[in-house]
Length: 107
Image 1 (cartoon, one colour):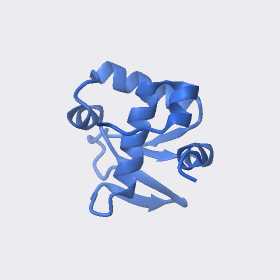
Image 2 (tube, one colour):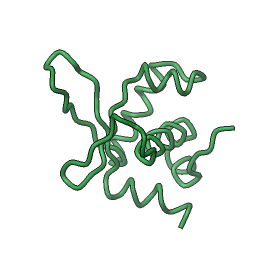
Image 3 (tube, one colour):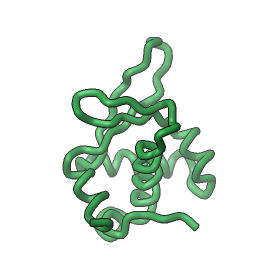
């Protein structure tokens, strides 16, 4: 069963909440190699393909739409921080507002 933040789900949608929870848990996983602190934010590297492997019940299009919605609502930030200019995989971090929302339910 997939857990997700009810505060995010009620305000922005279940799909957005599930994907936000997935990215949140990637950042909390101490063994996850594709996470780095930069500019006082924890950034996680995640492609739509990798998210689809973890959440196979969403299409890539649904994942991209949900991430775009989370960015539009200023919950997620996106950046490219790859060593190779050919690697276009995105890195995501929660904004201060996003962190507050993700922690709100569990406080």
